[in-house]
Length: 334
Image (tube, rainbow, N blue to C red; front, side, top):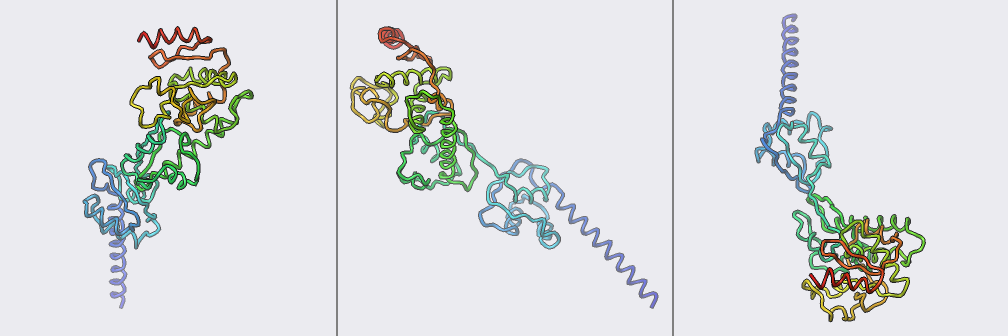
């Protein structure tokens, strides 16, 4: 009887040692580097469960010892996160446990999408439509239908989307980007309008957005924005027309082919500020923050005219005679 008890005790010890050794070996397999030698993009499909993902990783030879990963569901089920759909970058030297943690994190691979200042909504939509791995839900829809999907039904879209670089991941849609840009512009416009000067000729945030779009399209020189805003302000105060070429171009739409003629300047469109008084009915582009700030804080002065020097800057004049001389110097002679 004593011999049997000793044998059973020895058997228990051996089994315990074997179990411990097996457990340590299992842990070592999970802690070992996964089978990738360079950065490898891997996508967790929408709705995929843990076992399906592990089987897929093994079938692609991205992990060894599939059994060790499957055993995790029995030994440490609390260590298995809820997997998130998306693309992930698998790194050389990453352990199996780090892999599992990554696939349940928000560290998905993202892609940049840049919307430059001064672009139109049409240009923005074309850029978004061509973005790789971004789901397109607005293809074939009119601008009005897009704005309705963004809960801004009846609002003209031009100018309402903040130009910036946005990041997205696979599984996001064009509406996600549009919504981010829309909310950003509404927030920035509200902030800028709160800090406006007291003696403006514009009377609402929307008029500030329109004015900022004119400034954005007139100059890319940061130091000129407030001065151009000042010119527009003084023209409006004295009843002069704004007479800015970008509004003519915008009113021409797709007819514009790189130049405007005298006939174009005389054409009666809702946007031609050589013909209409005051501001055009909507923005003509997407202004950045700097142009928005200039629109609500024009530079004081006595200039009423400006003409391009051809190098991205402008010559500003106080009188029509001085302006005509500048036109001869910078435009007609050129």
